[in-house]
Image (tube, rainbow, N blue to C red):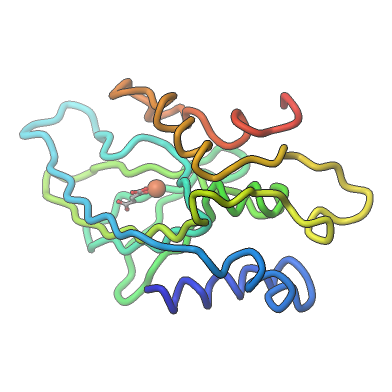
Length: 194
Ligand SMILES: O=C(O)CCC(=O)C(=O)O
Ligand SMILES: [Fe+2]
């Protein structure tokens, strides 16, 4: 997974600018680390509504997240226009989400994916999510070349661990957030109020 994450980050950097993977991989992403979350969703015994919340709407606190979901499906990603799109399970296919850390580092050029899990069937669902993150002590500051001439800086510099702490403290503690994303890096370090 480590090797795959590195390759994906390099590809993502290439998408931001010519030779950006050579310019920025070693200096910025060399000390990234990952952790794997194994999630088992047990549905309620009976449901009255069509869709049951499996995992509330959120953004990931990672640079990228690699997700495997089983054949049950249920993962949804929100489009820029606010429409929920089903990510249908596909054999031997992994999904990559951009997370908040990459969002801030890229000055918002790469959008942190807003996603959730809905349980549409009364069966167990299983997924694996591998979070690839900056080291805790890293100061996240979009390089000038990434921001680009004539563009405003959308995020103040911040230390990774401080953002993780902020999310922990401001998490909604079980409150329903199916339709609300909760706090993100915009609330923590955004320079504008929109
Ligand atoms: O279970 C899934 O498909 C997604 C899990 C997820 O988004 C997360 O753990 O952050
Ligand atoms: Fe997630």
